[in-house]
Each structure stands twice: as structure tokens, then as C-alpha cells.
Length: 384
Image (cartoon, rainbow, N blue to C red; front, side, top):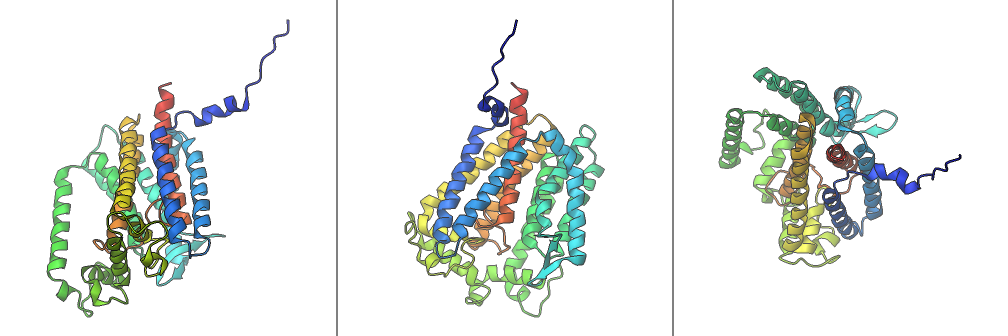
């Protein structure tokens, strides 16, 4: 007797690829992408093909997100050491043979020009999560010290380029992993206290500390200028303080409801420098006002909390630490970018996810979102 078996349809074959996706998380990501595209259409309207390129970069990030989401966390864990090692080796190669632009050696030609520090934004928390997974149940003070050394190595190499913005992102991503691994508040509070005292001293003695002949041992000259410009941008309103002043004018002029889509005068009269990249939020705030800014920030808050929820539901220590670090990394990006554009933090060249133009940044964003979805899917598929 011949028994005929019906061939599965194309959807039945593809269905497993789409199973287990965290739909609320995906919905938030799509919403943030739409906000970013709408803003890029306006701020990039007089800026060539930035809108089309931003959309292309988002599609590339979406492809990376989808591919990475298919990789189980166990395989991601196996990639931690090789990826971290590759990133550090490339940073050393950059220091020795890298391309220098505007006084910074951040790029390396390996057939194509890459910025190796971007790899460490993902590789460092991945490596630290792997380390604490290996030490689960037997953590000692030396284990935290070793984790600190693993973190400070790439941070130091990135600082030497110099690239303060990226080094802060790598540092914060690693610190989040160490914090979630159980670092004692007795070690955290003294560092926070020292930071508050240091900031207070800089603010209190800015006139003396910002004298041209005075050198800051721990910071490069351009980094000192950024801090001093933050404290008093009107000291050089047409030079180093121009970015901060124009950003604050644009944000303030937006008022409650904004000037309207495509109606931003500061934006379209080109008073805002880097209006499609680091200062894209200034154009957004001018056109959409306080209400639009609250909507954007609500999107980031929803993304962060959903990421933390994914971390809380993760089945392994590695997954929990990695997901928690990646979720809070969006807080770091948003806080630093919004702070520097609004004049409460120095300008350090940190893009705003979804909103700022940048191919490399979008690839990193797609990787981070894909890793979170991979961790979420692993939990969902295990429960089926």
C-alpha cells in the first residue's frame, strides 16, 4: 500500500525560524526605527542621501539582528573568548599600524577600513559574562579583580587612540556585567563618592583649572577643552562652544509642541553642526518639542525595561549577565547623547541609537538587539 505524505508548505518550513520572538520587544524596536526614520528625513533633507542611507543601514542592522537571534546562547558563549581576543589583537594592531585622522588613530585597514573598538562594545560584556559563568558558585574577590583586568585592557587601548566616547561605552558595558554578577556596594559607593568629589572640585575651581597653561595629567588636551567648554561654552561661542550653544538653542526653541515637521529653523538653516549624527536629537527636539522628546524617551525606557525583563527570565547566569548589560547599554547611549546635546555632559561623540546616522553604529545596534532576542528565544523555545 502506498501512503502519500503531503509535503510541508514553505511557511511550515520557515515557521521555526520565527518562533519564540519576543513580540513586545520587536514592537518597541520597530517603533524606535520609525521615529528615527521620520527624524532623519527632516534633518537629512538638505544633506544628500542621508535618509536613504539611514534606511539602508537599518535594513542591514535588521538582517544582523535576525541572523544573530537564530544563534543559541550556548554558541554565543563559545564565541566569547575568540571574539574578545580578536578585538584586543586588532586594537593593538591599530595602535601599531592604524590610520590616523584628526589626531586620532582609530581605524585599521584589513582590506577594508574598520574601527576595531566597535567590536569591543559587544565582545567585552560577552567575555565578562563568560568569565562569571565559569566561576558560578565559587566567586571570590580575585575573580572580580580578574574581571576588572579583562575590562581595563580594552578600555585602556581605546583611550590611547584617543577615543573617550567609545571607551566610556566599553567601560559601562563591562561594569554592568560586574555589577549584576554581585559586586558589593562597599566597593561601588567609594568610587561614586570620589567621582562626586572630583566633579565638585572641577566645578568649584574651573577658572583656575581651565587656564590654558594648566595641564591635566589624566586627560588629553582636547578632553580638557571639552570639559572646560561644557562648564563655560560662552567663552568661545563661535569655536569650541558652538556645538553646545546651538544644540541648547534648538532644544529650547522647540517649546512644548515643537515647530512642526520639517519646520526647524536651527536645523534647516544649518546652525546645528552634525545634525544627522551626534546632534540629531537637537533637530528632533526643535521640531517635535517636549512632547516628542517624552515620546522618544518613553521608547528608550520601554526598550530598557523589556531588555531587563528578558534578562530576569534568562535560563543561565551567562544569559542573565549579558542581557542585563546590553539592556542598560541603551541607557548609557541615550543618557550620554542627550546629556551632551543639551549641555549637561561634555561632547564625546556618542550616537543616539535609531536616531543618529552611522553604518558601524547600526551594525553594533543590530548585534546587541539580536543577542537580546537570542536569549529571549532560548527561554521561549525551552518552554514549548
